Image (cartoon, rainbow, N blue to C red):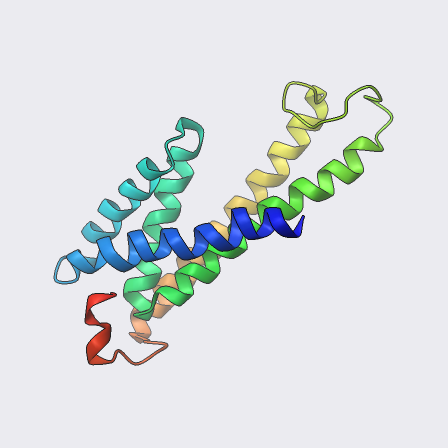
Length: 164
């Protein structure tokens, strides 16, 4: 679990944030905040090279670019990126522990969407949908409030101009 967490949560949070929000977004520093966020979000979605991940990675890339532009640091987006990937790995671990003990499918040794009963799929989709909706609304209001405050978490030193 720890090695998987490092490979899937820590490493991408650092490398993808430096690449997309650190290097690419810095090229759009004089452009409209929404335009630059949409472009880098789209690149973030494409970078994942997976049709299933494209939509949510694009939206997440847009939100993370907004966070970077508002807070003026990639540390905030790297932390959010780590939390999202880490939560996914943790939920998979918890599901594998509880699902393997489930009496519905005793012969299955790995979790896959095809092997789950339809009721379990619907419940899982409903829970994830409710969580996504709740966090989306909260994120919207937090970003809106941060934009009103024009808050910069860390001061921007002169040498930092090339990172952001």
